[in-house]
Image (cartoon, rainbow, N blue to C red; front, side):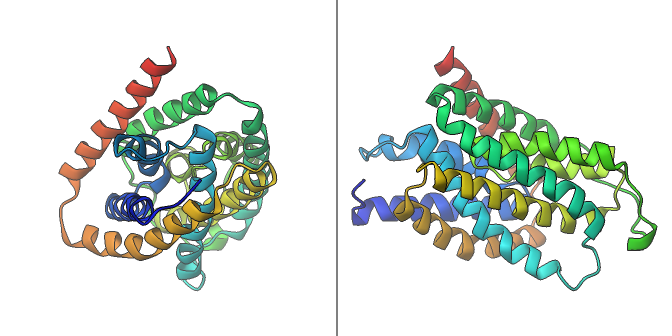
Length: 260
């Protein structure tokens, strides 16, 4: 795929806007960028990406986007190592299986998985995010089989579409496993990072990653995500959250209609 200057600009714009908005409202960037990558280039007369290529680009971008978040939380005492071990090993296996398995799926199949995850993401955006009061690391307990199985299932879906799966992990940690809020945020980032390792390795191994577009998206997201987080702290993002939910839901409906 030839990357003209205009194509690079469009990719950078998609990466920047997607990461800025995701940083602002606290939802995984892949859910926003997946439909943008799928629909915006052909609308502008540029080469269209297949669903496999979009998922591959997303996987690489998520890998780099989550490194910074984990690094920022490394000294705060909120990373629960036991939870990261159980969920991390499971989600790594799941995302690797999903990423490799997606190579044998049709474009419609990959898009269908995105539509399911996008619909879930809209629901998750409006679930109560309030967890337990923060308790010391050594006093936190959780159901290990539930943590492992749920992470494995999230990993498969995330591996297929190249998403991080954090938007599903956070409610699981808060509501199902009853993990304190700050520990949930930090630990979900670490588990998401591990998930992105499996997804990236699987996508690269099966030749589903376009390195040039992925590099442009990574550069844009590293600049935009911190700016989005800063903007989100200064403004009421509730209206933006509703707008974003409607856009994601609209995209999911369009994909369902295209498939059916």
